[in-house]
Image (cartoon, rainbow, N blue to C red; front, top):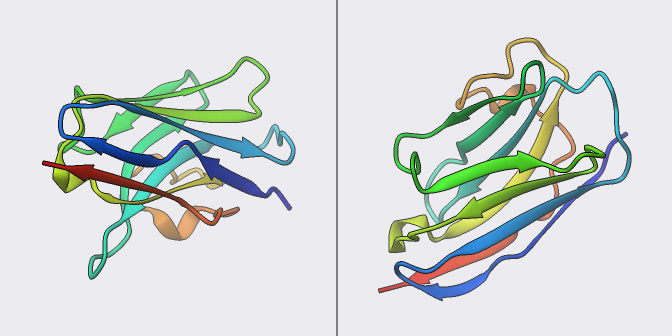
Length: 126
């Protein structure tokens, strides 16, 4: 039922920053996790950053740890991904999704997520 729409992507040079936004059509209290995922051409979609709403715990892929920050607004209608120190390998289409499954706090648990948006393209040039 929840529909998500990603925005904020663009083209930047290595070392630059971008802030992605994910707007939800509605807030569902049963949501346990909100996550950012990315997919580069020829590669599988992978988890980048997850927000476990119970206690607001966060999880990051090793490749982005220390550079990316996932957060949510007070109304819990918008999810953000602040991306700093971008690298060319960060180039991908970024997606957000939500999950009400208790096993969602895993970066590889894509099958537990719903509401995938159309994605927003991030291109990082060297």
